[in-house]
Image 1 (cartoon, rainbow, N blue to C red):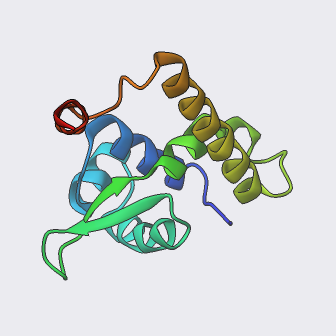
Image 2 (cartoon, rainbow, N blue to C red; image 1 turned 180 degrees about the horizontal axis):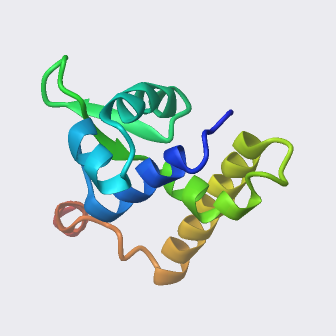
Length: 122
């Protein structure tokens, strides 16, 4: 994973802060050229840091992914980590494990009401 600094992190930051957005808006928010942002969004999509969400095939509406959020949290480690992509994956796994543990501690509060109703009717 080869990110361009600060542009890529500025794009991720803007998508995180403002939500789904398109290149012209991201260019204005980041202070980078529209061409630069348009070139970087597909690269960030290939890395799994953002996702193109449409609504149409040719629409350029993007949102940040969980991997993109982790990349933002780890940005200070980008220059010192030999494999930034592996770092993101490890942090995602740790995050997923922690969330699963929290669900267990809550004792199944995540069960849908419909599921609970089905269980009660049996």
